[in-house]
Length: 80
Image (cartoon, rainbow, N blue to C red; front, side, top):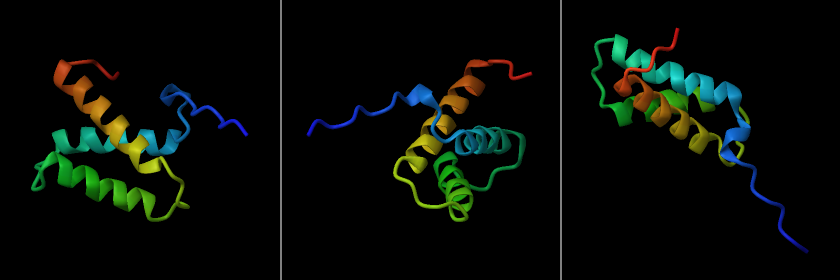
């Protein structure tokens, strides 16, 4: 039996998770961080995911959206 194709990352399988990841990245920059970017990401992701059913790929979606938002912030992309 042939394997099903993996959906493209742009399919936004976890829109709520991706939105939370982007929000988390922005919060780090507007606050007075006491954690590194990676520790903040892991803490925020854990807090977000704890109340949701485990689905493979959710953490990866969070991490990818977080990284994309960081890149946008550093590049100076306007979000408004």
